[in-house]
Length: 613
Image (tube, rainbow, N blue to C red; front, side):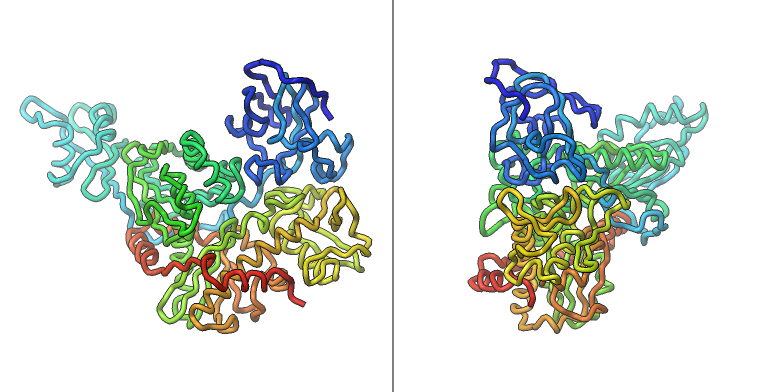
């Protein structure tokens, strides 16, 4: 353990993170994890800093902290495949406070570069059907003279042949300087951006007219830059949602937001910061500026929607899980704090109900050509919050399942994001466990697709029995800290608690499927098409999902993995007013079904806790 000593009365200390080349200030009353979160330094913390998951592990190489037995991590997986120091020196960052300036080493699982934050066809050209809300006009107006001294705004309106348009104030403030800068003594020219009956932006002639589509997911935030004059997708980028510092699951974030208005504002600011960072990086990638983004569309589940807009979330955290508002919203980008064109609008996609939000609406929009025409189809967007819609007989029944982060590697002892070195495939060769990692690097941890594979392999080899118990008599099963673990690779294991976490997640999802089918008087074999959406859903092995009971046993040809359908749907809405109208129609058509309050929920859930024989 790092040397400990009684707390001092110092106001703050400096924490240096050599691997990240960052130094931050730690206040006396906050943990190392809280200090990092406050200053935007990424430490994985699936439980949001409650000290229950062990993912925020660090080692204090210099300095003094108040290390206690509760803060210690003694698992070799905390430090990766080749530990070279005492295991007891690894500590939960959320459970230690600095008592001096410190130098802190971050565990490899937090440092590994994420390579699958957004599953999409990168590099493949995409042309969206174009009917944009914002239109551009290049105009030339005569320079003002004593004989023609109309206001600059009136001159623009005259050139457009319209007198009933309004001007956004921020746009109007840029008009006069821009006209005179982009002109000669006789003629003034510029580009005018119009949205409905409002002129929202003025720019030099022939400037780009860009749009930003954002899928604000619980785990990842994915954004797309679209040319609103051609419909071409110019660039895509996905990053981790920085709100994960307050917890990997929605309830953790809601609970944090409820504790104080300042924390709720921190969560809101984190989402805005992520969107601004995505906008900056996307524009930089194509040689554009953020001021050229003149329209935006954002989708997210109900909790993400509320946290972004600063809406109260206390009523979302308890039955009957009522939203403050569910209809689509249009508001100025500057009201949210987005750093794009000051006069630009943002369209916030409508929610369905409960935790079924706008991201599921956009997923339904993007996949409608796949489920329309089927007698019975099921659309599932797997994530920390899994949404399911059953389409049958002209009705769409929608429900959400609190699957938690286990299936994406969260709350798993050696879990990590889909980064280099993460185990993504597990198999059995000659009775022993073998693995494959992203990037074919030495194993550092286990990502979502690897979690599913690992459990399927452990079950097929009877290393895990039908009730979820790890066997004691297999050479790959060891005892660690009084608990059985299956060793997948040096320093990476799958524990009994991990098995239980996946059991709870898969049982919640399967219960959602069964109860929606029961609601319509259907059987699982009646599903003609099973559409699996989501970045995680793009990489999982369907057969592994069926082996552990996550999916019903259907012919493989009935399954279709479509990747980030929410991302495609939100792009379609950005490019097309018709798509926005259709999304609004879908949101109102979906019938939300709250499953957890139904009397049969517990019985069905317990039925799916075990594994198929």
